[in-house]
Image (tube, rainbow over all chains, first blue to last red; front, top):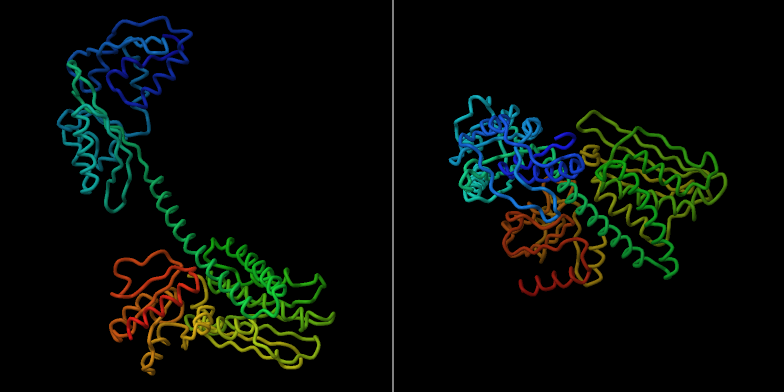
Length: 395
Length: 107
């Protein structure tokens, strides 16, 4: 054997699927250089001892594979042994009763004790959790009956480790399972990611549902307060765009929080006409939870829309000052938010209670659980909002 | 807010409360409440909608309870006996129909 490593004899002993794959790979790569079989050597004998097989190996007769490649049994190369025992998987050879005969050096990670301590003891003892124990017991039963079996099981209740375990019968001289090979791969990280992903999906489903409910409410309110279908269509479009922008801010907060500065900046960008000095924004960075973030974004949209139509943003010299502060010591700190229009045309209170004002008067005071006031002094609209900080910031 | 408008349009008299504690106050002060509708998520107040539903079912057994939420389905011990759950978003008609059937049943 030159470039190709023959593991077919090895595979006859072990029968592990991964090794068959390796075997096939080896046969492909070595086909050009390999010249038939090699006689049994001392290495083969050593191999058998390593695997806890005291009887001389008799490899079951095998035929030539369908693809014509040579499938005759061949003794293993010492390198093959090396390959098996240096895998990062935990490799164990058990007797028929499930006692450990041989354990790879990394075995203590699974066994929770030194490998030397565990040799001779039942492997099942390493699995203390009832469910895992049952899974492993079934796999051992299957292997004893000649069937390979794959199972996921957990060790350690305090710092759990998940294992993907392949349990494979190893045929003896009579072709019946004589030993059992157990190859365990640590899939703890994989499991943890899986759990995290499931949680994310549930959370996302929840948020999408809530968002759709909000869109539904916005659409219904828009239609309810519409003077014409055309006006309703335009208003709805603009509201959905405002919501979409607010979602961009939410996405930056992993869908669970929104930066107040970000929301204000979004509204300013959406409604400013590009003229400098239109908005004067000041306030510390406060991170709102998703629900309050969206409500506030809608409110900013309504205020801006109103200002552009009738208020400070409808004339060139008009300005809007948006400011907020956190006042008082924790945990009683309060968020004070203020929207004030100046320099616009003289303002009269709206004659009709539209979505914007209703949103502010009802939703906003409900959601924020604080004092909200929207006034229309002749100098320009003023909104003030004061709420307990703890109830509106992201946890 | 939209639900309140929908129900008002359908002929209900709606008493809005922004969180559970306010809802309990309403129930303590009025004796003509025929049905309670609550969301699960209520950032304000001392309890969520499930806790409110259980409390109301216990204190006012004649008032039927409807819980709505965008958050999946309730767990086995979330809902009191006889209460209904509607996932959000829902069709306004479903809401109106459900509440009407409650009141018919109670009458």
